[in-house]
Length: 87
Image (tube, rainbow, N blue to C red):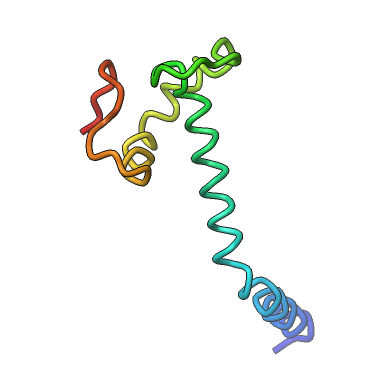
């Protein structure tokens, strides 16, 4: 095994050693960030005043596939939007 591969394997192990304890925390923070972003995008449709609706309206078609997972994670059995039926 060449020295380059040994160094690469060592660096990957070191990276895993430092990131493993924080993986759950980082994934939860990322999921919370995604949930907030989803709420901002669909806020106007949910009846919440959204001052950024001009900018977020064009993102709705892109996020419709993720919307079903989001509303289930938020504890809603069915889509809260009358116009968007994903279930």
